[in-house]
Image (cartoon, rainbow, N blue to C red):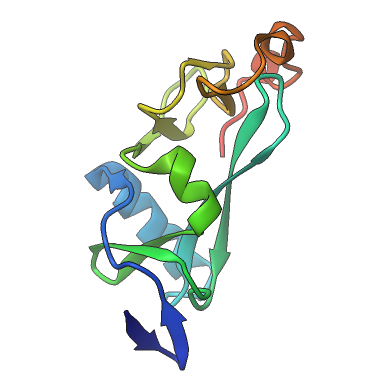
Length: 143
């Protein structure tokens, strides 16, 4: 346990791996928005065509029981304790292509995922929810 801004932070370990391209993109976004001290929060919430979906947001300080991954050049990734179950071992990359770019998450905990990569299912989720189709797949949107 450690103290950051008087907040007790949970286990300090690398929950996710961030590729150099993704780290550079996160760094550039933080600089462009004038918030270089912020961290990228990566989380999982219910929803999407496969049952669970990824989310990302910038946050100034870690919360209690966050897992913190120090990437490089002051770039940090935060994962809450609930999302940890789904994201542990995942890799975050940034892809820039003509067909649509953005952050991509390669998650070894997902047994299936939506065509656009925003939604996924683990072994313990109902198969029926993944048969519904995804409205974001056809847009090629990314984070």
